[in-house]
Image (cartoon, rainbow, N blue to C red; front, side):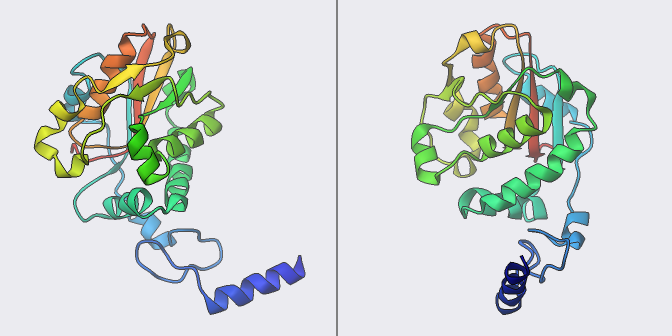
Length: 228
């Protein structure tokens, strides 16, 4: 153990670990982000009416939990961009850990029966190597001791990046989801987990598909939202 600690100290001296946002060297007790950057995370308030209307287009959502504000150029956008597009899964797992601590304060989370990550099309998942929403969903499932069912619903249409098709998101995701295991969803309180909600098109269309399986309710937990 002493040898390991010594080698670790030597390595940190040669190749110090830095904050994923500001680049400052992390000190003892810090991981992935420095405490200063953690303190700057822009926490969201209750979901506003605009967001609620967007996600309720095709079926009523029982509850919505939003953790961070997602705005152009802010720390949230920077970290999630690195997580999704630069294969920095440790950022996603660290944010998920902080997020789960926040979700523990929300009473209705304990009523959830099953956790479902918003699915990626299989080609997109192969291209990226992982589904960022699934990483978040697994963390939530573990924190609340709830089953995570990643294959209960699938994305049936492969579309271009939502970021480059902002004006066409609703048509791009229209009827883009299909339920694969309705028997696992019928009569259940479902939680959809997403990384970012912008227009709400993807999650709203996923909700439409889920209601075909006759769940008891559908709720949403999103790491961040720009609908503020």
